[in-house]
Image (cartoon, rainbow, N blue to C red; front, side, top):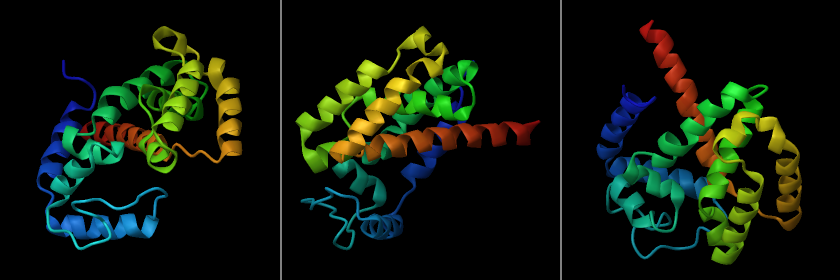
Length: 192
């Protein structure tokens, strides 16, 4: 039996492989408009210059410093291999979608340093936040009750806000995981 979302992921990979330079033009414009903090300049395929390569190539060049860019090359592995499974497991014991989404966010934040934080504040801060999230997150079966870590998550959130830290990459990957879940539900309903 294929993993949940495997057909969607296959279709997504095909679409990502077909990205061209016009897609890079649009994405670069969107990134400039969003103006993420800590973006800086890149030696190749810098979003502040007109693209000279397709979007997949541009993202591959940025993959080592940006978790979102990395998703383009690995078929959104963090969404399909961590975010969705965490969401599905958490939904079984959660008191609503909000608690399940918190579990996804913590799983993503505790798995690797947030690349937005790393760009803006450095690797030491990003790793420190990852370690704090890991101390709050509950692995495996312990996450059957997402409400159990809600208080600790809110305390971590208050602390991060007080320090001005915004783990935006993990927030984006959380939203992508929820979107994939909702898209899978819609596709499943359409097939029935």
